[in-house]
Length: 186
Image (tube, rainbow, N blue to C red; front, top):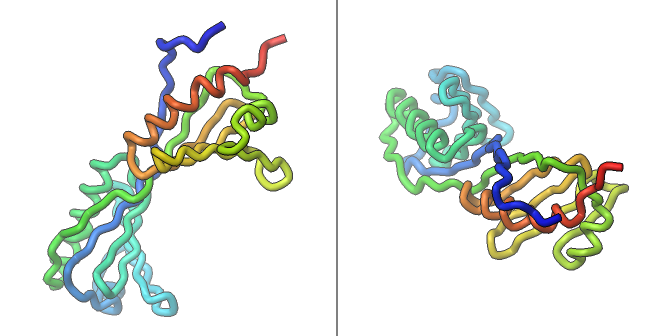
C-alpha cells in the first residue's frame, strides 16, 4: 500500500507568535495605570496586555519591543499587533508600528492512522529522536524548513516552525515517513 496523494490532512494553527517595535520608549507604569486588560509586572520589567478580538496576549517592554502570542493566523497576528499599537497611541505614546515579524507558528495535525514510534525513530535515526522516559512523542527536526515535528503514537503531530508555509511543508515532508511506520489494524 502506498501513501495516496489525495489524502486531505487538516492542519490547525493553534498559536502564532509575532514581534514588533514601537520606535519609542514606553512608560510601563503609565500603561499599567491607564490601560485596560493589563497586568503590570515591575519585577520582570514588562506589562502584559490582552486583547479580546483578536484574542492575543502581548508582552510589552519599556524599550518598545512587543511580543504578541495567541493568534491563530499570520493575518490575525498582524491585526492584533496593529490594534495594540493603536491602544498605546491613544494613551499618548508616539508609537510607530514597525519591524513586524512572525517568529513562530505552532500547529497540530491528526494522521488517519496510528504510528509505531520505535520503528519511525530507527528508520530516521539521525534526525528523529524518541525518549519515552522523558516525553511520549518522537521528535523530528527538519533543518532546511527550520521546523520541529512532535509525533505521537496516536497519529497526532505537533509542528513548530517559523511560518505557516514551513509548517505545511513539514507536514507534507513527514507524511510518507509516517505512512511507512503506521500500525496495521489486526
